[in-house]
Length: 415
Ligand SMILES: [Zn+2]
Image 1 (tube, rainbow, N blue to C red):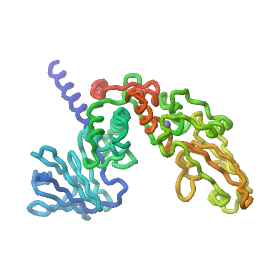
Image 2 (image 1 turned 90 degrees about the horizontal axis):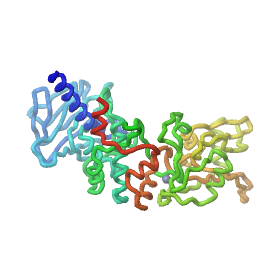
Image 3 (image 1 turned 30 degrees about the horizontal axis):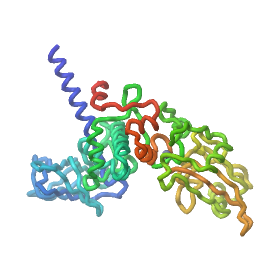
Image 4 (image 1 turned 60 degrees about the horizontal axis):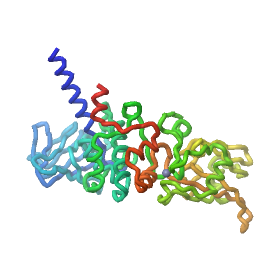
């Protein structure tokens, strides 16, 4: 019995330790990587088939058989992964050069060849808390009020915990496809402190860590219902006003038009995209229409479905060939964008106007916010913190019904 208990305890400790290590794919979206240089102020240990070998620096090149490792006594060709680390340094950092970028990282670097001559896969493995040091200043300015930095640290930790993927080669990438992570040189004292002082804290719901957490730049007034915008209802991802007021039901078109005609005092009003305008000219509308049907001519544009929070979910474009419906928050942003740029958000109202100069019909889009607007408004965090709210109050406001939990306790509960 005692032995059994001891085994369970070991498993528990191993799982908690695993939950606190993240594996980040580096240089996401930076192109094919064929050569990587690894160096440090201290000797770098490479785990080769001959064992651990120390060198001042290493270079890994992709080959048709796998990888060529140079830097030790002899070049070695390897089919599989190789791990690099630094030992006996007060602050072990590895300098990684690839595709013209040079960055320093905490933890270990593992390099392996990708199949079909797709270059090298570079992964940084490090404790979750040290990963967060490199994430929080990539997501929000380190100069923001401290409670907003704490809230961002808790959000980023929750996000990374949700994306631990033991069955995949890595958990996260270093771009906006996961969370922006640029390693040691991007760290700032205030954001490191926010990570340290929220150590192991995550967003919880009904006593468990939440399975999804989302955040975005600016809501422009209020957030959205995930069920209406993405088709997956989540009890804490519901419309929330970015102010002390209650959220308004803007699903009615008249209510939405009136909302945008009136200035709103919001927590995120310091954001440069709290309110924005886009004018769709006759030329823009003709281009959109031609994209839908080459022979059609534009007749009219109308919002035909809107979420409770105000996001446009469907527009109808009437043409000489019939009606075309464009649906989906992201799809609408892309299709109604101009000059190759998507709309900042799908939170806007249409105003039909006559261009008196050339007697053509135009549409003024009065909009607000940037991003999908489901979850936590980052500029709203800034505004709430500026008014004295704590990180827990900020997250409780944007994610109603949630609480702050300790990840260490939660890992214990999961086993
Ligand atoms: Zn907001």
